[in-house]
Image (cartoon, rainbow, N blue to C red; front, top):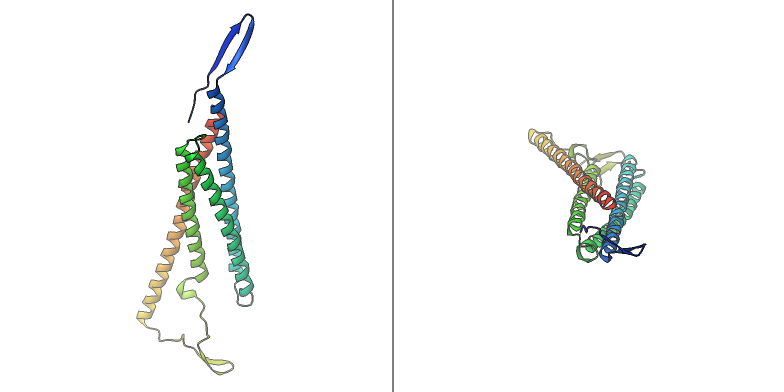
Length: 220
């Protein structure tokens, strides 16, 4: 809440006494605390950005080292990255919820507008994370027509020969089914990517609002 600054001057003889309005002190203190929390929030968002960069880097390394010879090690490394990033995201969310609660419930702030702003960022961050995971799941699986098959259930008659259960007669129906599966995959991937882009745009707009608020409070 913006409170106008007031000062009263009184003279006693030739001396000037400056009396500070207690309300003014409270207003300045409140603004300082608000700016501090908003800057803390921006710091948390930076941590989130670094966590996404780590997740992206870990996924890239996993994809590049996917051959069977190194698949197990790559999978373990990727899962470790996912665990670490999940913990970081959870901690960031807890800290943002704490700040949101202060803006909403602490009488020293009473900034419902800022609480709602942080809540909007949280909502978009959740969407962004869910869709990022969706993208990685889809890319790990690959397009249906390009996926590797397992021969565990095939029958081996000789050491270098086996009856492959995946062999089937190529028909028009089979080709159509595969094309439809590929089209669905492509559509799902495009929607997820577009969803992440929309979420990022919304988050950046809200962060710009936070920066404007900080600038306004510091110049009042």
